[in-house]
Length: 168
Image (cartoon, rainbow, N blue to C red; front, side, top):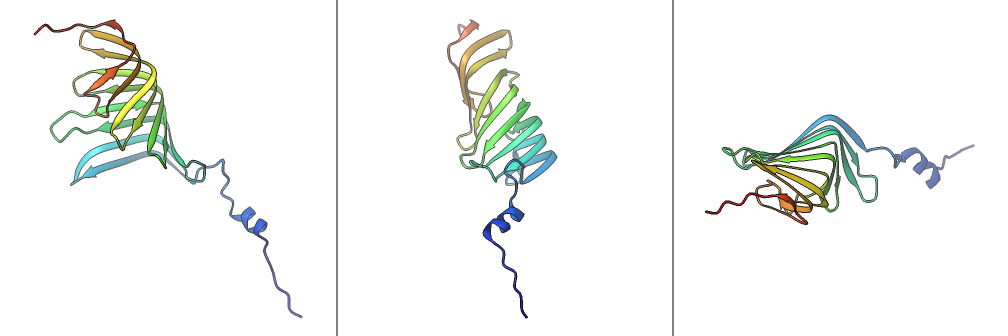
C-alpha cells in the first residue's frame, strides 16, 4: 500500500505567510552611507529601521530618531536633518519625514517643521506645512517651503516675520 501527501495552495500560503503587519527585517542603531569615489555624500543614522517590502506600496520605516548628513564636499560643512521618524516609499523613493523636523546647514541657518518631504532623486526638500527659519538675527515663519537638499537655496511661501535686507 502506498500513500502520498499533497499540500493545498492554502496550506502552503499559511506556512509561508510573512504576516503583513510585521517587517521583513528590522535593524536597531542602523547606519547607511552613500559614497561616490570613496567620498561620503550622504549618511543616514536611525535608532530603528524596518523594511516593509511586503506592504503595498513597499516602504522603509525609520524610527527612534533619524539623523541625515548631506555632505557638501570634503572641505565644506555638512547639512544635518533630524527628526523623530521617517518613511521611505521604496517605489517612488520619496521620503516623508515627521515629528520635530530640524534642518541645519553649514551657514548656521535652521529650519523647523512637523512634516517634510525629501525627494532623494531630485535632491529636493519641501512641505506645505508651517515652517520656521532662523538665521543670524532673523526669525521667519511661513506656510510652505522648498529647498535643495543641502538647504542652501530655499523659498518660503506665505511669509510672516521680520526680514533684514542688506542695501548693498
